[in-house]
Figure 1 (cartoon, rainbow, N blue to C red):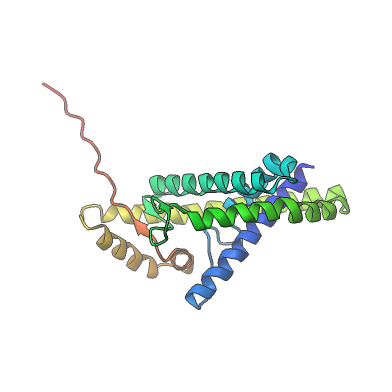
Figure 2 (tube, rainbow, N blue to C red):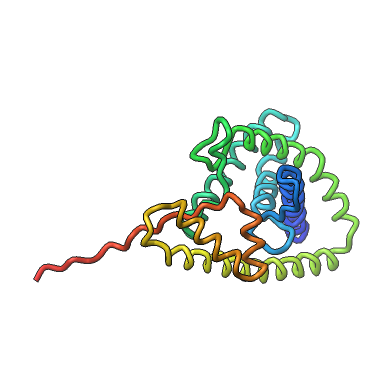
Length: 223
């Protein structure tokens, strides 16, 4: 049973990547590989899909509850992820400030509504379909597939987060500058001169805005 949920996580992560890849590629009129990971997965979608499955499956016959709670939960997850990523890596990775009815540029009414509708579609259609497929596959095959994908994701995450931490180090080099926009441009310039993995991340988040690191407080001692 656990393997089914692990595979469901990867399916939702892949669906999320497809959605964002398609949307931003059409918007920018060029291939736009989204997400922090090298592979075609957006774990935030997988996490949201699994938790909504566990919490909202029993409300499948009440669309309003599923849509409303799904919108609130996914928006909270997106806001929290944005906040933690910014604090941890000193960079704003996405920004909805240009959209109406946004909250600190981290979430917006439009994206929250889409999350709610997507949650209802997930609970009503995707889950029953996928679980019926899982039931027809031998448990050994499910376990091997789930373990293999988990190992691949772990390796991908280690490589990807190492790159992101390096971006944080680059950001610190320009901490003496007062202009945040200037810092951002300098960081982006350095990233374009690095390997393809750095350039991929920059293309995935074209609205990347690095934050000026706060100066460390000096401990003053009285003699």
